[in-house]
Amino acid sequence: MSEMESVVIVDELKTSNGDFTIGRLTLNKPKALNALDLTMAEIMLKALQQWQTRSDVVAVTIDAAGGKAFCAGGDIVSMYRSMVEAQGHIPQFLETFFETEYTLDYTIHNYSKPIIVWGSGIVMGGGMGLLCGASHRVVTETSRLAMPEITIGLYPDVGGSYFLPRLPGKSGLFLGLTGGQMNGADARFVGLADALVASSEKDALLQKLSDYSWNETDGVNFAEAVSEILDSLQAPDTLPSSNVEPNMALIDDLCSPDNVTDIVNAILGADMSQDKWLSRAQSTLAKGSPITMHLVYEQCKRGANMTLADCFRMEADMSCRCGESGEFQEGVRALLIDKDMSPKWKYENVEDVPEEVVDHFFTSPWPEDKHPLSGL
Image 1: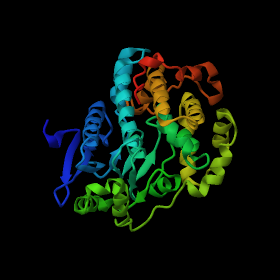
Image 2: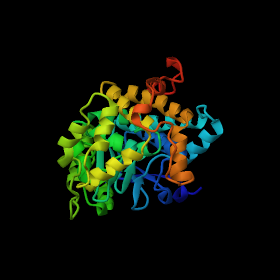
Image 3: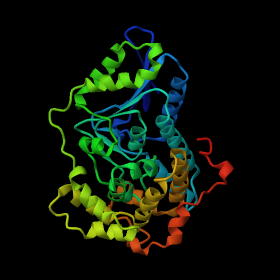
Image 4: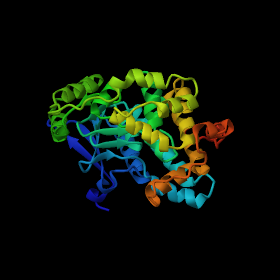
């Protein structure tokens, strides 16, 4: 496979003075909307780990080929195949995939150099995991961000247990339950993006990063330098209007009950006919997995008081349990395999899901000292 055919292009941009390097990772599966597969995650993790140790690397950019999507999610078709083969057991492939993906996401969150993620176009699921941990999260007028796992019987993973409950008010819980899509203005409002710039500015960003007068003694100020560069980029001609901000009072009210059944029924029972964005969110929730509804509520409740590392360990447990439960498999089948859009969920309504079923998703398949993410 040549470099141009690689699923992630690993590149290095020399700065104009020749002394420093900008690491660049480009997701390169545009026909698949750059969905993150295991090989991609492995390539990215290895490159980041190598750049971390090099004093000449001052910053890293992560972008994607094609203009339609940064990353539309994880490679759930491969996950589906492994679940079919495992027949009710935890597939080894899933364990390996989630261990690698979550280690990659955790590495981005804790990286010692600035990481700029160019989150233009579709940024969903696994794409959100790559974006949310970066020190400099860039969105554009074409950005469409979401955690839509409610539609496939999974739950908002890739650190969602950490970042969703830390969004303003109850917006994180609402977005997790409804798969509500955010534009660039929404992302800025809830705190999931640092800069909203024109989608045509990516080349200008790379050029300015190369031209900047980096100085090794300014290592502590690398992040400030990147912020200055982002501030100098052109804003979109037309700024999108936030959907989340004007609806915050309603979102907080609907999500105020102390149990998921009342919250879901409040959202489903509200008159949202006058607001297209709310109506779509309501419709997505209505068709979603009742098990996922419980998982979203519980992960937000627990994750609000957990460290990032503990959130990822909890998610590794949850994701592997999803791999054996059948609900995730059925959701992917309906959406991407048979494409009948009619998943047969295990329970008809949110109130039908037994407490012990939900609890099982939060039990670890491994002893504490054998957990695949024990080293985080």
